Length: 211
Picture 1 (tube, rainbow, N blue to C red):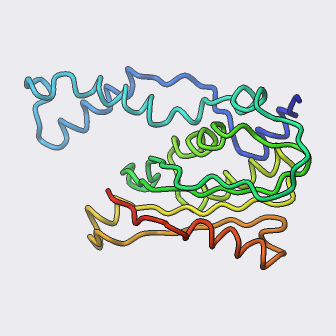
Picture 2: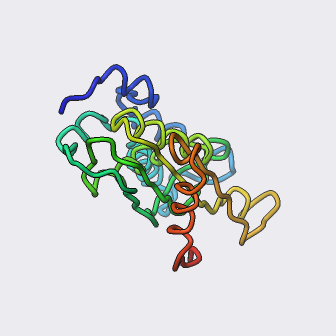
Picture 3: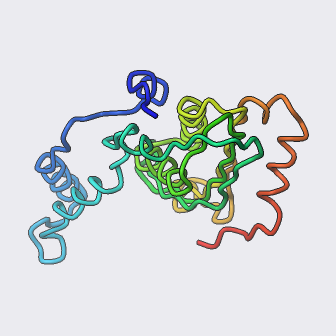
């Protein structure tokens, strides 16, 4: 089944197809090192600008992920209308305020309405939005809106739990503080029993995040 690429990209705020300018990143990192009083030519830092450019290319790959290519071969017509849930999806993202990591787990569920998405694609959808400069609240909603757009399900539920290094390493320095965000669409918002089933499932047997 083909997707409406314009609808998907607009709804999910997707593709930025510009090429990463690695040399400009390297030059900027060199300037930062110099501004910090470091010597960018010393042995330990000599290749740091190149490594940082490569790191950002990997960690921000979600900007260049093609959503149609990501899921277009994994939509299946089925007669099934019970909850589909994938929980404890690990993610790694970068806070857009300080460009420090936030890491955690996402729990994603939907009620099929004639089609389902291949199991491996749901973690990839999470990664597509996590590998950007993000805030957790927006990422949570983007995942839910994207699945709602491509599946037209009876409902979508997303809960994200995150540990933010910007509040653990600096500022308030609260090591164990976790942030939980949620997005409930369709039946998960309108039907208390459906929402409670989802919440019970993700809490049953849940292990605390160990990072």
